[in-house]
Amino acid sequence: MLKIRKMRRSDLNTVSELAMLANPHATKEKYSKHILDELRENPDLSFVAVENGKVVGHVQADIHNDEAVLEDIAVAKECQVKGIGKRLLNKELKALKRKGAKIVLAEVHYKCASAIPFYYKHNFRITGFVQDLFGIGHDTIILKLVLQ
Ligand SMILES: CC(C)(COP(=O)(O)OP(=O)(O)OC[C@H]1O[C@@H](n2cnc3c(N)ncnc32)[C@H](O)[C@@H]1OP(=O)(O)O)[C@@H](O)C(=O)NCCC(=O)NCCS
Image 1 (cartoon, rainbow, N blue to C red):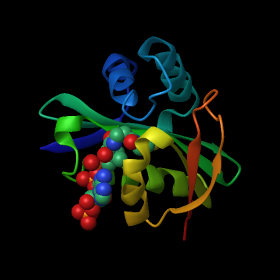
Image 2 (cartoon, protein in one colour; image 1 turned 90 degrees about the vertical axis):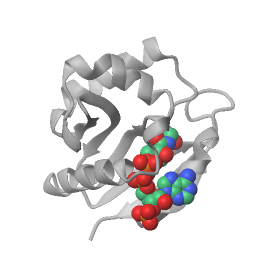
Image 3 (cartoon, rainbow, N blue to C red; image 1 turned 135 degrees about the horizontal axis):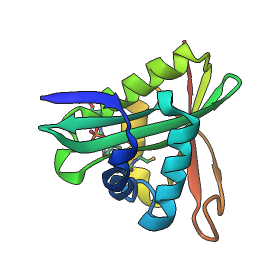
Image 4 (spheres, rainbow, N blue to C red; image 1 turned 60 degrees about the vertical axis):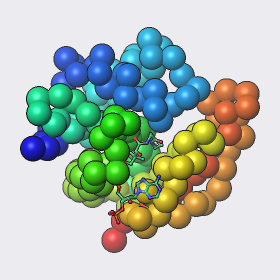
């Protein structure tokens, strides 16, 4: 039984571990501060997936005017390709629409390029890349979704 609920501060440790799957440029300790900052700033845009009482996925986003950025989406390795990422993304896109987002960007580190077909399934398209976005050598592919 899978449930999507808002992220809580008590989820931070588990979410920080999951986030490493999407952020190979980061360390868990440093990145957990980023997750907490996002949670404080955007509590309505931070969600977790819970299966049998265990947090197995998360998503966070940020919005400025009508442009949103998916800060993170990750699902525990053993739970991937079972539809959990899709449930998290749909929840996030609904929340972003409610807040007036028209465009959603996703920044995918080159080491996570295997996630690109997942985004294409949800109508994102590659719109460019940024060299060194997360530090020297950490090049990143940018995907864009225009919300209807
Ligand atoms: C990307 C990620 C969040 C997808 O979550 P998931 O739970 O595995 O994805 P889902 O099972 O919901 O898949 C949804 C659809 O995308 C497709 N898909 C997912 N991963 C795919 C892959 N690597 N290649 C091709 N298709 C893929 C699924 O087949 C599914 O299609 P369907 O609806 O037609 O069956 C997950 O693989 C992940 O955590 N990856 C590591 C972290 C990461 O790279 N995050 C993204 C970068 S920010």
